[in-house]
Image (cartoon, rainbow, N blue to C red; front, side):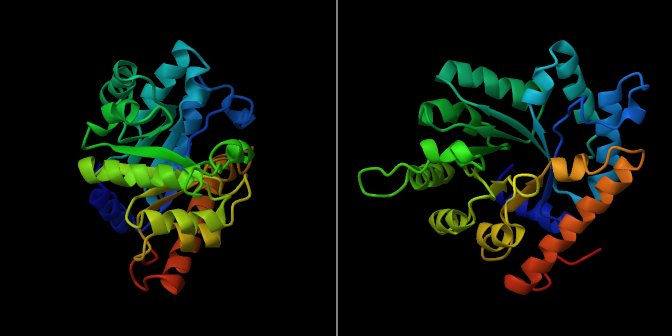
Length: 281
């Protein structure tokens, strides 16, 4: 998906919300355990309950592939119930030498037809190019991740004094000039750095995890992470929405949480950035 198309989607849905479908048999409501396929029943109920309020779903591939063949079948079935007009992101964090990356790209962009993927940039352009060559797909480059260990490498200063994450943003900007489909993963737990990265890449779409269970500041993530129009960002929330309750009302509660997050974000944008751009509904 080209970056302009993502912004059109955000405007059409009036939402920057991305919901993470991080499936976990130990956390789904016990009332589903009698279902023939409880994990699929959970995903389907969450999707049906929240689809009105989101622009994207992010499926963390580790939660599916850890289940072996049934996990890949669950992934495939889940993709079939996500409505058209919503971006589907494979949170796979792949990248390797070029011929291996090409197979990763085929897996997620052709076999499973995801709209976007997360990719590690640390093996360089030849490892990322096979993803970028799918010009109708979005490749989100890991820039400054939300976990505490991101400081081990991503904040290291390079020769000119800039931190490594700024160099990643600059490289992604150069790759985007060639392909037009690059984005960045920037953790919502790094609120000051989001502004710095946004200044370096003013128009690239950001995928912003870390809001909710990881403690990211929503207001600063929205104000500092969106572009000058209050667009070009997806704010991801996973556990806070999908595991908000373990009783039979889990889908209704997830719907309310997704709507509330959508409304909070839109209010912040209307006050801080662009009144009227993202109205309530």
